[in-house]
Image (cartoon, rainbow, N blue to C red; front, side, top):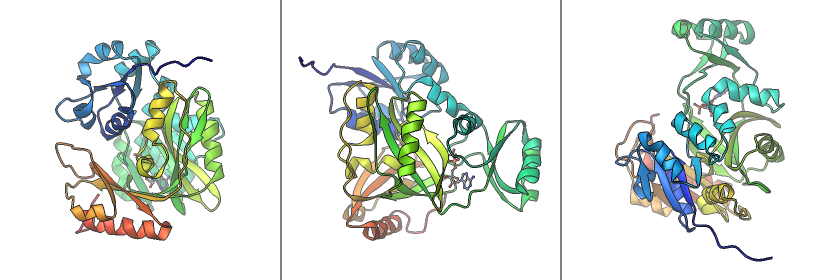
Amino acid sequence: MYSQPLSKLKIGILGGGQLGWMMILEGKKYPFEFYVLGDKEKDPACKIADKCFSEEEYKQMIDSSDIITYEFEHVNENALEYAEEKEKLLPRINNVELKRERYKEKEFLRDNSFPVPRFYVAEDGDEALKILKEEFNNEGVIKTSKGGYDGKGQYFIHNDVDKYQFIKDMKCKFVVEEFVNYDFEASIIAVRSKNEFKYYTPSYNYNEKGILVYNYGPYYNDKMIEIADNLTRRLDYVGTIGIEFFVRKNQVLINEIAPRVHNTGHYTLDAASISQFEEHIRAISGLPLGSISVSKFFGMVNILGTDNLPKELLNYGKVYWYGKNEVRKRRKMGHVNIIGNDLEDVKQKIDNVIKLIYPQGYSL
Ligand code: ADP
């Protein structure tokens, strides 16, 4: 047995948002350089990268990196394909391909016997409304197959289908899905490398209008762990993954998968022995994964569409501010990580933090 030094890798990240920013903050502990494909002036990850490349320079960036990863699935497709072709992309392209169209992800999960809500695929808006009527008695969710995230392109219909007749003229593909009357939403963050599988304790998540407002935990659910293990194995996955669920009694249904680090895993920066970001960097670099323990009661509140940052927030937790140039409605500007003595204490602190960030209540 002889030891090998840590290679001085050059890691390229496609996408310049906050997830890339946190990957770099955590990955900079290693002797690695980080390159980002994004907007030099505006993107949080670009501001702290060793080098930022513009969209047109993707080949140059990929050629000069040892490994390419992505912080968001809806990034430059040419760059993803070129990185895959050069055998540098992790997680591999099959994972992002599932996310290009919602129906592909849903069909993949159903065809591989993972639990999902009942759904049908419609070729256009007219067919979507017909399916809603015939299969779901006009109560369900119509989701555009392409281009949806953070709740965009989703129509929740509850016997008010008359209001949604405009969908009839839409000429794109849709997924029409049962409305799940869940008890709560939850997610698990897991990591797979070539030889190892690890996972974090799941969390309870609270979304409003399709966007995560806060989450907390721990929440224990063995089924979610088993699904994360099987799914990452089936996807031949390398890196960190987030899997979101609806929980109804003792049943879990997958809502969606995120083949990357995930908003519901921000708590791992402060409540776990190693963060989801550092584990991701280790997994894609071929390093041993760290041992994961979540020994604390934790919470996280997103700072959405405001730059109101009262310093009293520091009485309750740790503030992460992404440094985005412009505030926009619903935009993720930062988050607050909270640690508590028990779940009640965490929930109380979440409540206090929400009141401080949104003194007039939040509008999403
Ligand atoms: P996106 O892909 O835009 O992030 P999701 O499909 O994850 O959107 O949905 C966002 C949120 O909308 C979910 O977290 C949940 O709160 C709600 N939602 C989505 N689909 C359903 C459904 N079938 N039944 C009930 N609520 C749903």
